[in-house]
Image (cartoon, rainbow, N blue to C red; front, side):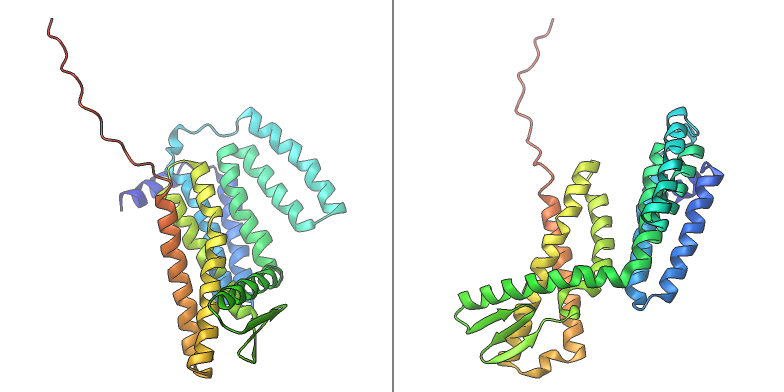
Length: 283
């Protein structure tokens, strides 16, 4: 509650133009969520953009210097770059740079860094959510299938893999996009960033901790695929029912969060107990 009060207290120190940029970008992001095929995934990604910006208010903005000379110079440099990108590369990227230029001109570098994060989410990632799902899902499916087969072979099962299809005991199972963990990705990114930000004190540690989320997701998904394949062998097709499959998906998220928290605790060095000091000599 105290942190929330400090956030609200700092809102009045937000420069008007950068604040307006964030609000309008957030509204565009909400529209993108509304028309997205996977609303839950898009909503989680939108909230992640918001979470990226909120730490800006942890600082005492009454002492911040806005409209600094260096940030203004950086803003003017971004303008011609955005024009070049507009004509030769990617219009939406040019819009992001122009909005960032406005933030730097009327704000400062700190605010620009936070605004860039949410702009990338709301104006770049959200509009291409379906493409990103396809682009990321396929390698995750291949990795999950291959490592699952290796684990099953080590346990003595007759298993093989061809692309994203796994054969076990004479039956072929396709590892679909739903099995790749892609549908839980945005939610796990959101939870992972919140945990990394709250558990670590230094920005470098936060970033390193957050980067470790991807291999943890892959590992958790491999565990889910192995359990699914074993369930098909020993239980039958009931393991593929929507309720069981969804439950295993939530179990994957839970396992990912637990492992991510455990890894995060490794960043904290154990505090050594101070050795007994010799008593000072009295004068």
